[in-house]
Every structure is written in structure tokens, then in C-alpha cells.
Image 1 (cartoon, rainbow, N blue to C red):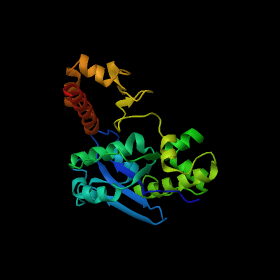
Image 2: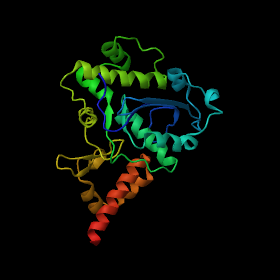
Image 3: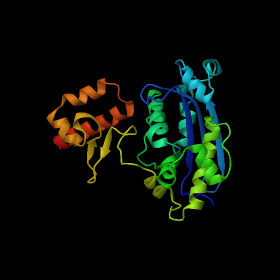
Length: 258
């Protein structure tokens, strides 16, 4: 089965220095871009993270400090990567919770205004977990009948993720072959920021999804406790979360002025 597309979609996978979205860095990124006419293009980059890669991370993906020492930094690659994905929807495995938030952080550090207002994202892991609740290797075996070799190689994982989605569409007739519908199905909850600190309630209002103000409207908290905004900006939150909160604060200010 082919994926029905009205615009390109980029499946991608990251290998990183760790799992902290705000602090860790990319050491490898692979992108498979699928066009509506069925054409595909694939690129893989090793990245110098400009920080030491912990031994436990190297043990998982096999990428050492020596291997990336002479590779370009993400900032040096950022324009090329952004040009490949900027006109596309996104797809990945656990991408909503990890890969997209971390990619957004790297883009913002490189002074690229990464935004997904007109982009939808399919998280193949969410579809898999809703249907079967396993891992990528098991998903690949289950849907494609093949063993996943070179697991935790960004290129191998990226291709496997794309093939798993096609296998899911073949297996489940109730899944609509439509990128927007697949993105909706693979989303756990509607969030305004990538990292999940600001969500939308059933009425579409922005609410905090963490801490002492969890469940409260952002506008109400900014009104009643102005210092909370400054605390978030100075604390260890992802850059994209801070950007979104700043936009909401400016929107509230403009509404008052008008």
C-alpha cells in the first residue's frame, strides 16, 4: 500500500547524547522524504554535538566522541536540514514526545524559527501501542515480517518506521490513509508546545499541563501570578516552551491594549 499524500512527509530519527530535551544534543539525524508522486529522497548526517557523548549513550547507538569530532555541528547543518523538512509533514517513532521537541530545540539554538502551525505529525509508535503495544523491532517483525538489523542506527530506524506505517495501513482497514487523520490518531493529547508543558483543554483554551497550576488556564495564571512567567523563562524549560508562553503573554497584552 502507498501512503496517500497531498504534500511531502519527512520520516526522521535522531540519535542523541541523552533523553533530556532541553539539554541533550543530536549526534545523528536521518530523514526519509516521501513525495506525493511516490518519489523518495534520503539523507543522513553525523553531527558534532559540541558536548561529550556519555558512555551509556554510545553503548546504545555506537556513536563515540571520536566518530563525530570532525563532523559539522547542528548549527552548520541546520539550514540544509530545515530546507529539507520545511514544506513537509513529519513522521517518526516516539517523535511527538522526543524527536520533534529535541529537533525544535536544536533549530532554535541555531536561530531558525522552527514552527509547526501548518504541519501535522504522525507518531507511528502511538499507532503501534494503541494497536499492539510493543517496540520498534517487534513492530517491524509484526507488520513487515522482517528482523530489524542495525537497530539504533538512525537510518535503519527511519526506514523501518516508514515501512511499519505502511504495514499498519495494510493491516488495519479502520486507519484512514490520510496524513491529517493519522496524525490525529497518533496524538495522545493536544499540546501547544512540543514538550507537553502547555496543553489545550476541550474548549481549546491553553492550560498548564504541569506543576502547581496544572489544569489552569494560562491567561488566568499570568493575570493572577505575573511572576510565574518570569520563573519559567529563567528555569530549565525547553526554548520552544518559553517561545510559546511568550507568544501567549504578548497576545494577552495586545488584547488588553485593543
